[in-house]
Amino acid sequence: MRRMLSVAVVLAVEGYLYYRYALLGAHFHFWLHALFGAALGCSLLAVFAVVRRRPLGNVWGVGLTGHLYSAFPDLLFIGGGVLHYLWMDAFALHISLHFIPAPLVTMLAVFALSLGGWAAATLGRRRVAVGLVGCAVVATTAALSVRTPLPTSLEEFREERTLAFFCPLVVPPSPFVRYGEGGQIVLEEIEE
Image (cartoon, rainbow, N blue to C red; front, top):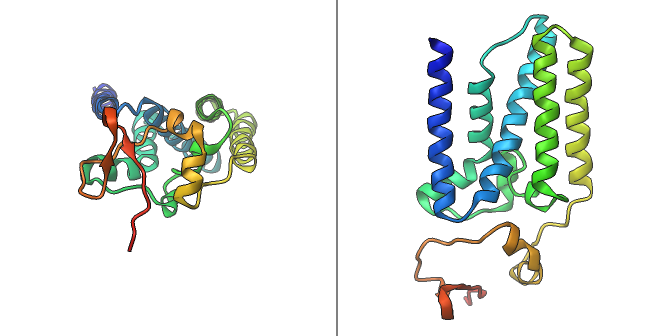
C-alpha cells in the first residue's frame, strides 16, 4: 500500500509539473530536467546500495526528488518569474545541460544507464552497478566537455539561432519587455 501511495504521489506531482511546463510550451525543459534529475536519484541510490551492501528502496521518490532539484530554477521561474542566471548551474547543471549535443537523447542514455545501475545494485550485482553508474558519469562529462559555450551577453544570445528552438524563452509580462508584431518578445539591452 505504501509503495502504491508513493507511486500515486510521484505521478500526480510529475503530471502537474508537465502541465505547467506545457502551458509555457516548454516540453523540452520538462524532459531534460526530469531525465537528468531522475538519473541523479537513481545513481545516488545505486551508490548507497553498493556502499551499504544492501538494496535501498523507493526509486520513485528519489527520482522525483532529483527532478525537483534539477528543475528548481524553472520552479522559481514558474512560481515567481525569477529569470535564469548562470549560478543556477548549481542545481544539477541546470543551464549547461541545454548546450550539450543532442540534450534529450544524451540525458535519456544517462538515465537508462543510471536506472540500470540502480537495478543491478538492487539485485546485488555491485560491479555491474558501479560500471553502469560510472558510464553515466562518463557520458555526462563527455557531453559537457563538448557543449556549446554558454552565452555571456545578450548579443551572443541573439546570435545563437538554435537556442530559441530548443529553449523557448517565455518571460512573464513586465514593463521591461517589449513585444513585436505577432506577440514575439523583442530582446533589447536595457540602457542605464
